[in-house]
Amino acid sequence: GIQVEQSPPDLILQEGANSTLRCNFSDSVNNLQWFHQNPWGQLINLFYIPSGTKQNGRLSATTVATERYSLLYISSSQTTDSGVYFCAVGRYSGGGADGLTFGKGTHLIIQP
Amino acid sequence: DAGVIQSPRHEVTEMGQEVTLRCKPISGHDYLFWYRQTMMRGLELLIYFNNNVPIDDSGMPEDRFSAKMPNASFSTLKIQPSEPRDSAVYFCASSSGTWAGKLFFGSGTQLSVL
Image 1 (cartoon, one colour):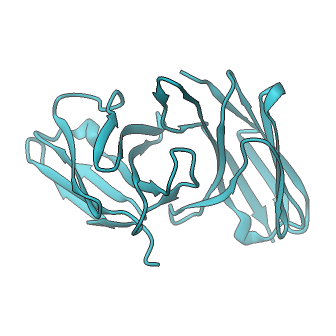
Image 2 (image 1 turned 135 degrees about the horizontal axis):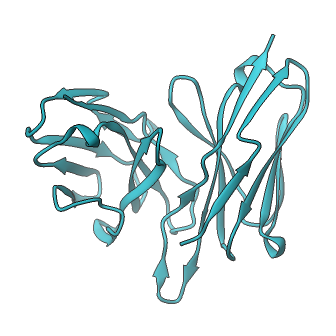
């Protein structure tokens, strides 16, 4: 199956800082999504982004499918951004579809 | 929309007992996924359905695990008999219209098998 590697595994920042989280994947994909798991365990979908760039407030994401990576940018971090950020990828071919495979996540702590 | 609804939120049981986890997907969503999250293995896909039909169950760890989707608004994941190594958070998720649709997760069921 597809391998997904996220970096860095842990990140500690001060409130107001910017950050870039990276997701590398081992094969071509036609589905890529970013999720935030908050400290209460809830998984929130941030972006569906198999290619290109999207922005939502202080968050933006870019996927370069041909080079097999995606980046999640968080600007002006707030303490509520703390949690684990997951990248998940999947592939559909004529023979069927795989479910999304998740990376191990980046654990982000924003200190006040 | 109420989102994906899972029950129970927490389940504590003893080894050997049957456990049934329940999920109601978002209305109109035709894909339903069951995931398991542990510290050691992260988020793993167990099985997914399309239009109530199981499509890929290759992630189901053992025959002790089974999943059903009798209709578009309800799915169950059953473990019989349960073992301590089954302790994990089990998530249900759904998406709409296409396999590649945006995935929405329920709040999860925290299962502890003693």
